[in-house]
Each structure stands twice: as C-alpha cells, then as structure tokens.
Image (cartoon, rainbow, N blue to C red; front, side, top):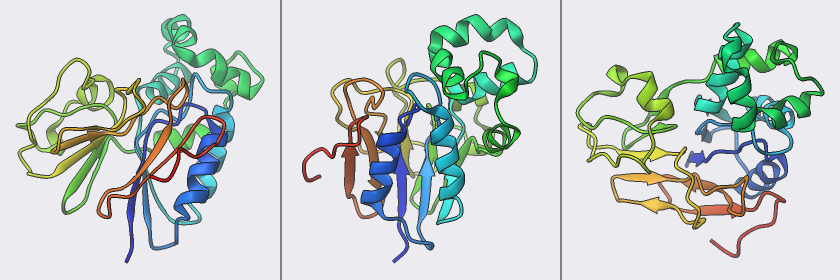
Length: 220
C-alpha cells in the first residue's frame, strides 16, 4: 500500500534528513509531505534543498512552504528591509551554506524549488500546513499569514470544519515529543536544537525520529 509520510521542520539539518529518509525508505508510490522551513538555523540549508530536489525524483514529494522559506523568497525579490531580521532569524547559517552573504546568490534552481512549494495539501482523512489554520474556513480560503506564521504555541484551534486531522509544524516542541491533540498533530520536534527530526506515517501511525547528527531515537 502506498504511504503518506509527513516530515517536520528540517532547518538546514542535512544529516538528520538523510538519516530519516534512510529509515522511511520511500518507494516510488509513496507520498512524502515536507512541512516547510527547510532553511535557517542548521548548518546545511543548501544541502537540504539539494537532497529534496533528488527526493522528488524518487517518490511523490509534496513540499510545503514555511515562514523561513518565505522570508528568503521576499529578500530574493528585493525586500531588503528584511535582511537584518532574517539574519537574526537564522538566515546567517543559510547564507553560510551558500558561501555568500547575498540572498541573490542562492542558485535559481533552489529559489524555483521554494517558489513551487504549496501552502497546504490534503488527502481524504488529513490535511497538512506549516503553521496553523482557522477551523471555520476551508483550506482554499485560509490566509497565507495563518498557514505560514500562526503557531499552536499562541493559538490552538478547534477541529477543522472538514473533519480531517491536521498535521502541522512550526511550533517547535522543546520536549522532543509530538504534540497530539487528536484532531491536530504538531511534528516540529526541534531538530535544530536538542530535539529530533520527526517523520510520521499518517495512516499507519509509525514514527521515526533522529537527532541533528542523524542518530536514531530508540525504536519508535
């Protein structure tokens, strides 16, 4: 049976991404949904995007846009007033991975990858967003600001009007544990810090976790 596997916020942690993909062992018929925030904070944002570009040739990859990714796109498009804030937000490590302090030096293929990321994705029983959602609105009517920037740490919504289970990132869980409210699950488990990169088979329930160095967390 084809699987749908969600992967939480990667934040430049290439070793963790490589390790989690080795555990998941995606097949061509599987769908991998990455929840955004591919860049910033971790050491190898460039390597993460390069690996995701290859992953798209190995299975059905559905990459969502994260708020960190959106900031880079805005800078690339000339909103230079965001530059200092982005550096403090973790953009310094992203630029370091490209060997430049100029956002415009990020390769066009990597910018094209980020531009192609979706704001949401849904299946028969689940939907996926980076940040948060408004319970009363269909996904197509959700404000981008909510999907990208709103956090479960600030506002926990009720069940979505679709009845589907939400799979989200963005609200990093310092405990390293998935936040599971039943109708919404947050799988950002703070990989770039002292936590884990989490992958979740949304139908089968299997969980894989590795730290930023790629070491597996027990038998999940």
